Length: 435
Ligand code: ATP
Image (cartoon, rainbow, N blue to C red; front, top):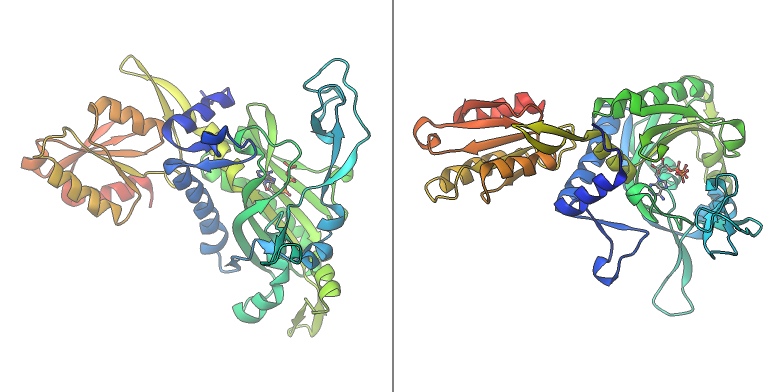
């Protein structure tokens, strides 16, 4: 049974230490969240899985890590200073502010009846701050609203140093900031979030073909990591939704408890960004193809995903409740690559005779995997906890282990158990986890 309510996931996140409201001891800070011991591992696994697919398993994409703070020139050229705004309306009855394009039938979600909206106005979503030690004399700088510009402004540097040529991509994972008018739906929309973006530079004539290639590849990434296909869809934007530079955009959407929501946008950005930065900076950002003796400005296909939203989607899709031995259990059927812990080592009892062997197994396995170690409570309750946090495999060390040099592997999804020689344990876990 997939999670029907967002509340089920929000509660699990709080109870087990995945996600906490930011600044909770001061009453909370609604627009951002803190990732706890398990959530920080899982978020990192989401980002690592993306880098693995997009960079490690390909020979045509490189990774960069650009600065979060940027001078106004970047955002002048990119169009963000002029255009990166959402339509803001005020309700004069309840005094709240809304994004006009999120209102259904122009009904105020708060005051319902008797709502009175002001005219909508463009509200720029960028966070501005001041760099420099002297108050009042500092330079205005911006927190990046997307990671993409880092790839465009470094196009020349990467081209010169990486030995890549179109078609090739520059990828980046990192924080972005948007002063969202209405943050909400848990970690779906926050003012500080992480993106996983790739700019794929291609010869102009090949851009349509690469666009359709990336739409397919990106949808499959979510399926391969465990989201059922019927909870995903690829939605092409209508002509009136397209950004002025876009020749086509499709969103990968997930069926959230409140309806379809975007996980990722795949956009054909033409040569807009490189041309803009070329013009504004006075530096040529193009490619000379020695084979054809032609110089051209590459076209760009951009798959742009959000790590936090995606993590929420993976959790919602994995959430399940079933009955084991007449007892209800909650289980997070996460793909092993995404699970915070791959394995938990559980000595059957806290008795000192078991500890040295259990700790040795834990240390050996930790060299290779993120492993939990837990010797509190009854074993059944410890299994339940591992099920609920998505740990695919438990390794139980019992008193027989001291005699037969074997342990029990228990599977999260089936709860089936198998006895395995300690000497074969690593191989057996590798087989079952798939890596
Ligand atoms: P939305 O329409 O939901 O505001 P967007 O179309 O503006 O999103 P993009 O600019 O395409 O988003 O950004 C790429 C991805 O970054 C999104 O698909 C989403 O996963 C993520 N993202 C964007 N804004 C936020 C946010 N405020 N909080 C969390 N993730 C975000």
